[in-house]
Length: 101
Image 1 (cartoon, rainbow, N blue to C red):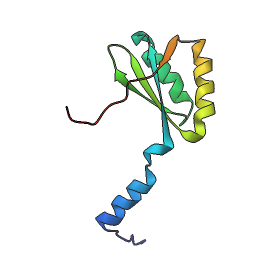
Image 2 (cartoon, rainbow, N blue to C red):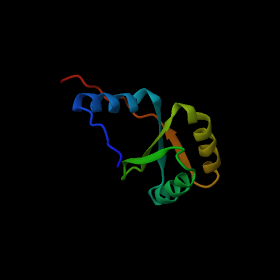
Image 3 (cartoon, rainbow, N blue to C red):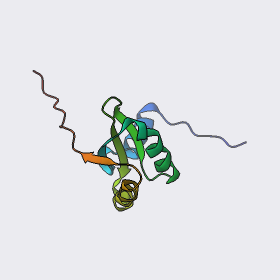
Image 4 (spheres, rainbow, N blue to C red):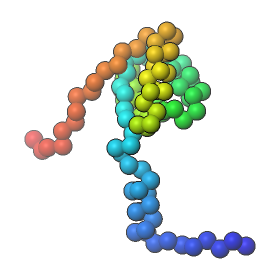
């Protein structure tokens, strides 16, 4: 039987902070026809771990594509190949402010 060593909550939280660093990922925002979202996501998922997709606004069909800094070129190449299949526009979202009004 293999014995697992327990680590404290503080140490565990430190491991989580080290593993997920927000500056290691990049985001690309796209506007696409709502009827094309499922197809776009299906094709993206066939490229194992290239990026993941989330829907920012389902009514205006704004998508967020998150990828690592190391896959920037591959992600851009994927988008160029998808342009022939699905029309979309790359957009810039206004930055969110954290100040109080």
